[in-house]
Image (cartoon, rainbow, N blue to C red; front, side):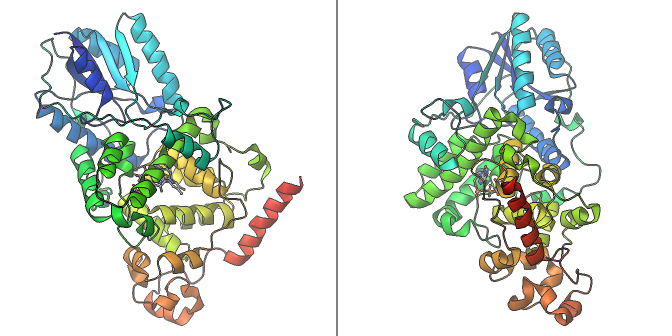
Amino acid sequence: MPTALLWFRNDLRLDDNPALQAALARGFRLLPVYVHAPREEGDWAPGAASNAWRARSLVALDAALRARGNRLHCARGDSLEALRGIAKASGAEAVFWNRRYEPAIEARDAAIKRALRGDGLHAESFNGSLLREPWDVQTQQGDPYRVFTAYWKTASSTRGALRTSTAPRVLPAPDAPLPHTAGPQSLPLLPASRWDAGFHDDATPGEAGAMHALRRFIDTGLADYAQARDVPGRDGTSRLSPHLHFGEISVQRVVAEVEASTAPPAAIAAFVRELGWREFAYHLMHHFPHTVERNLNPRFDDLQWAKPDPGLLTAWQQGRTGIPIIDAGMRQLWHAGWMHNRVRMLVASLLTKNLRMHWSLGARWFWDTLVDADLASNTLGWQWVAGTGADAAPYFRIFNPVLQAQRFDADGAYVRRWLPELAGLPDAVLHAPWKQPALLRQHAPRYPREPVVDLAASREMALAAYQALRQR
Ligand SMILES: Cc1cc2nc3c(=O)[nH]c(=O)nc-3n(C[C@H](O)[C@H](O)[C@H](O)COP(=O)(O)OP(=O)(O)OC[C@H]3O[C@@H](n4cnc5c(N)ncnc54)[C@H](O)[C@@H]3O)c2cc1C
């Protein structure tokens, strides 16, 4: 049987994997390959938390392949050279992969496809990670969308039937000579000291972990999702984001399982709509690739951001702003590599509006610390909160973190979990402890006495900067 390379990237699964299925359907034996090539990601080489997750996900994929009579062949360095080398050593005739959409990677992959075809190999790519690829959805004028509601209306109403495939029971290695390659443990991905231990309290990298998270969510969270998704102290969301980012589960599989569940249709629609934001993020990144660095809305290019203050930035990063909901969020991020969506919005609003630091400073911190760090969703999230992106929160909407915390963390469960030093404060004081200095001193002598920024005054200054921009 002829041999094909199956080039794994952000599709670290065997279930519902279009490239894998296509290669099998064309009669190939598969040689699974992973190439570690962070330099090819442009300015967005994966961050430390992301690498720590990926390391475990690759080990899980290798184990799944071994259980089927195969293994993952890992290489480092230039992707094209690695693929060429492995193809030559094994006599492979084809290379199959699932597409990625980050600007630097789209350009690289196009060049690799051309080069492999030039070598006489069959090179083919597939959609393995989106319900709708970025170019599949357009306005009646043929333009990309910039407003989510309109995008989602078109994208969801023209979706078509879901088609999923299951993992093959066996995937025997080719008869061809196998290249001398290392396994995933050889890649420089895991941190030297195990600061990532907390990442795995509630999540397990790999395909089995992804399926477990989906099942748990369908059984215990989906029915109540629309209400619970905004309450950070509850386990009310799916926690699928890193699994989706690394392609440990396909979004088609997620939607198929969710739609087959007995949850109320409104709950299902609310959840699938959130997946729609992920789709929209990819749509925007593909059509407006500059937005990973610069404002989507050029009107904001003249906004006067504050000069970054390293002390304030560090206080924000380390969860020492003196504003409990913010600090709880930043400490959850540091410990778990993940933060609840509502709190992501609050910490981003504090940084970009109250502290008036450019959104890219926050995006970079998230990039290094999130296990679900995803260029499309992170860019969308930061530009949305900063007010500089598509369909963004209006610039003048500045979240008040105290009111938000009182509303969405009314019982203080979230703040008490991530800031145990404040656990003894009464509910009435918990979200603005500086208002009761004696109590704060007594319960948490090392917690900041005052917020790093005056919330009311900084709000006014942000609004003034916005007004100045409008008048230009
Ligand atoms: C400033 C900021 C930065 C963000 N950075 C990222 C990021 O790097 N990676 C990332 O995956 N998400 C990011 N998000 C979006 C969102 O916070 C996470 O997707 C969500 O919290 C993941 O938790 P979950 O899987 O339990 O979500 P659920 O509520 O269970 O949602 C299911 C899935 O839908 C998708 N989704 C939900 N909300 C959004 C959204 N607003 N934008 C895009 N996709 C969404 C995710 O894939 C998620 O796993 C960011 C949001 C903000 C405000």
